[in-house]
Length: 372
Ligand SMILES: *Cc1c(COP(=O)(O)O)cnc(C)c1O
Image 1 (tube, protein in one colour):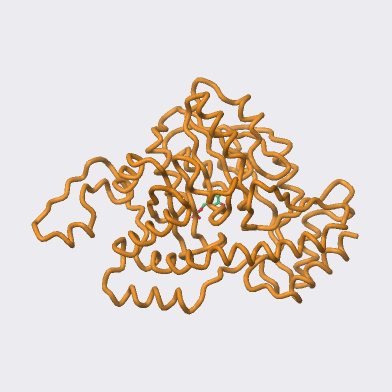
Image 2 (image 1 turned 60 degrees about the vertical axis):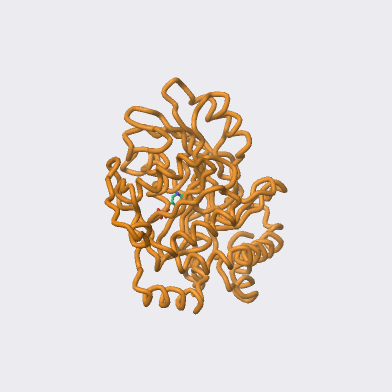
């Protein structure tokens, strides 16, 4: 059986978790601080704030950006549902925009949807391919609204030579096992804004004015105050110690993923009924997923293709979902033909480390047989 994905985690991560457990400090503490510092250095952002997952990262980003009841936030419908849920959590309204053929949000459609209630644009770097950050930064500046990046899948990707995480005020990452590096579950927010960073650190830990580490290290008795209603969105030191080891491997992991992707691109380029992922010289793509779009002239239906591949022991997934067609969002009554078509006609094929040449060849041969 060839799986769709698997995390690349070694003895080193297991040892790091083991060592941390034996120190006796297992929730947010020194390892979280170290992970944050290393993550900020890696991405080139001034600050990094670790949280329990990317959904909570997005939620806190909405709060510090000042989004609240009745505000509108524009985001793609073609994304994981957590993107829109984070907007709902603060009482705001997700306004869905279309995407382009590369699955990333379409700025022309976004422009049409901006009005006086629009407070932010939440762009998503879809399956790791960066969206057009500069264009959105410019647009947000012109309209005086906030830009937030859902970079759940984009750790290790770059845009115009700089790592994702360094470009804007609020960038949210995920360390779920389906993403490029993992801590089991986990998330991070990078920001260049000191005020955002300070408030994010308060909010993730019950609004507490003094964190456990500071209190523990203090030689004088300190009492904490709770400055506002916060949350428990902590990452643990066990997870952070795994994250530190994963981060050391990240550039190598991205390079390996790109090697596999290049083999797929080369081997599949002659199948004329499919469209392969776009590469762009401004965007170094971590290939969190490898998605194939089935064009009109395809003789096999997407779901049938998925079943036939599964019969051959090859696991696939449907392409990125559309949020507006999920039951939880149907009442917003959207029709987004481009997103719907892309979601219905794309599949994600296996890509993980280590994926040997035989497995790649087996996937390619079966795809060729079913598609030609
Ligand atoms: C996975 C994912 C999320 C959610 O990440 P979690 O860490 O599981 O909360 C949010 N947005 C996108 C685009 C994702 O792919």
